[in-house]
Length: 74
Image (cartoon, rainbow, N blue to C red; front, side, top):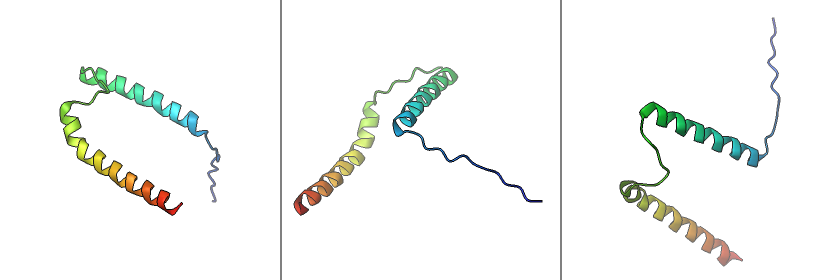
């Protein structure tokens, strides 16, 4: 017996996708807060800042080099 599972090929507007994902993130944050009993904030702690600063700095430095190489070619 042959069985076919048809899938609908739909494209979603990226802006709608971003909005849907933002709502999903907000809902998941709320659920996590209720499950842990801990109030969550989007603010970084001093520990977070110290931990991620080198990575962000390096990423920005690499992007700056890339942009300057592109500008040099123009």
